[in-house]
Amino acid sequence: MIRVVLTVLVAVALLAASMPAVETARTATTAERIGTEADRLERALGDVVAGSTPVSDPATAARTTVLVRAPSGFAAADLDRVALVEPADRPDGVALAYRVDGGPERAFRIGTGPVPAAVHLVDAPIELRPGGTSRVRLRYVDDDGPTVRVDRIG
Image (cartoon, rainbow, N blue to C red; front, side, top):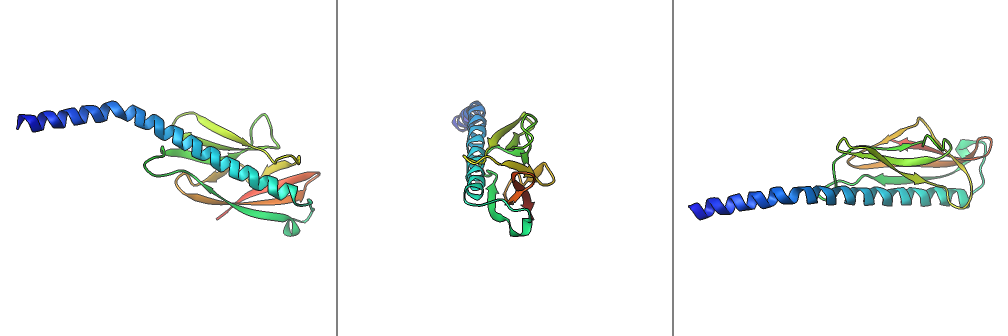
């Protein structure tokens, strides 16, 4: 009986000692996955800009839809927020911002590739699902210069 109690106590102590390392790994995995989603979104923006010409009518503009997946599951940290935001230092740009468990907000900048174009978030910031998939539409229009309009669908 004493062996069972000691075994349980040792197992609980080992689990408690390993939890900070597990949380650190989950946070790092979440940051890596959010960075991957930012890269995918940047490639989609670049593809729309590189292969098209901006037009004044949004109905005829080049467009694409991108799925942005927030990491979830045991290997990912709990996200309080995932959003597309306009950085304060670059109002014509966009960043994928996220916050883990009430911590500081972090962001990955998203560019348009080698072709310069402004990015305008319709109804900024665009809040995304912190535990699932969000659909984002990109349209390449001419708003006093080449601009990619970004809005959330659904």
